[in-house]
Length: 235
Image 1: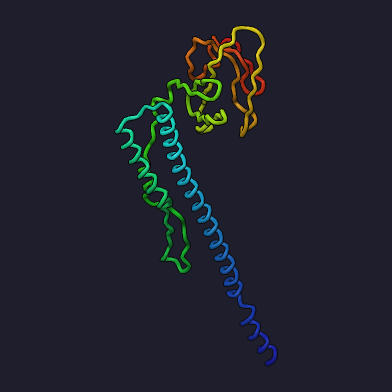
Image 2: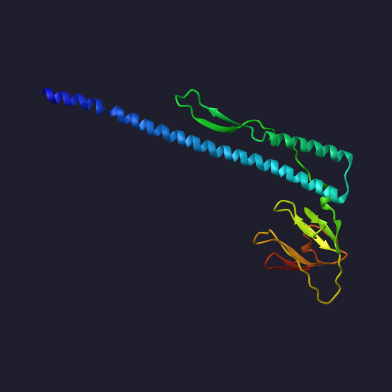
């Protein structure tokens, strides 16, 4: 009986149910910490990406505005002042891009964390309005031909390269000034850095027509759009 009692006493210290509860608490605590850390990482990355996109969008709009005004040679002193202010705000945002803080629940025995966005100068970034000149037809001369352009178009005169410098859903228009009355003509165009399916219109318009958005839908245009569409007199 004495030996049995001693054995039972030893079993109480090793098989006590509270040890299992402690082990379970430990596993659950580790799981909660890992979940909190993973959530914090995802939230932090999302806030960083949002801040970067906002800065990129603002700098992109400023670049288009400046390029269009330079090509049109149409700007005033007040435009310089406005651009300088916008660039100053943008520079400040780049220097302190992420107004993000980590919060701890200090009342807990094991303080958990979470990520929140605090008040940021992101909200003070300049809203860049497109210059009116982007809506007017401009004439750019490159070797051998004069081009009429409209929208976010960049022209490298040295090698006659034309680049779309706007965002994806912004249309850019380029038309040469050569006149074709009859007969057959061969035009060679090299397209680089595009995605399939691409949205590019190749065609002819009347020499009396004004270059305008959606000109391929006008009665005076005929040509091909994208991979399979054909436009003839607006349809």
